[in-house]
Length: 192
Image 1 (tube, rainbow, N blue to C red):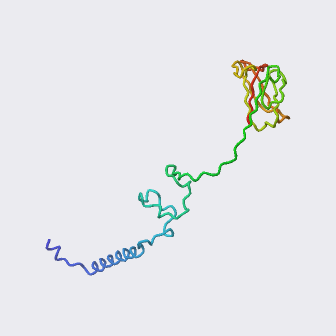
Image 2 (tube, rainbow, N blue to C red):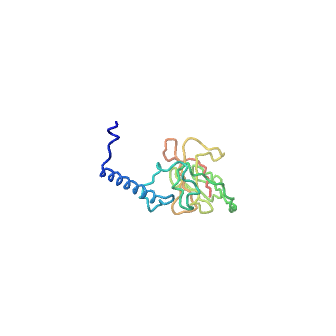
Image 3 (cartoon, one colour):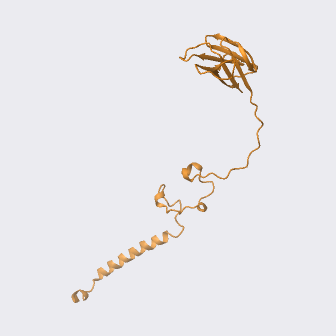
């Protein structure tokens, strides 16, 4: 052991060690000089270098995000919380609902109705009911029913549609239980 301690390093070894220390010291010093606090910004980062797993949880808070830089589509569905409801707007005008109805016999004659002016049989199980106004933008509903009371029947069905060429007319087809066109008494309701 004394033999090892008594050995003196050669001058070349001393110069090599000093050169190594200077080289390492300069690199470390240069690194420390280049990276100062708040010295790395967007220009120093490569595109895509910072990903979600590299960001510490809670590191990005609202006060660190510039206003108007995040859209609703950027947020996860669970993060989209609705705000408080706004004030109620002004009330719109009262709506006007017009109801027309007719009860028609299987022969095509009008038994009774409101705002119905006439009815007629066009063919087996095919009828047209005429009202006192344009009903092409209304909704129509017809059902098989007895003309003497308001109870609907159950042996068959009726369907409605607009008859081309007459904006005040509703076409009604009545069918038997098997689905074939058949002359039937029916009730039709039109709501506009």
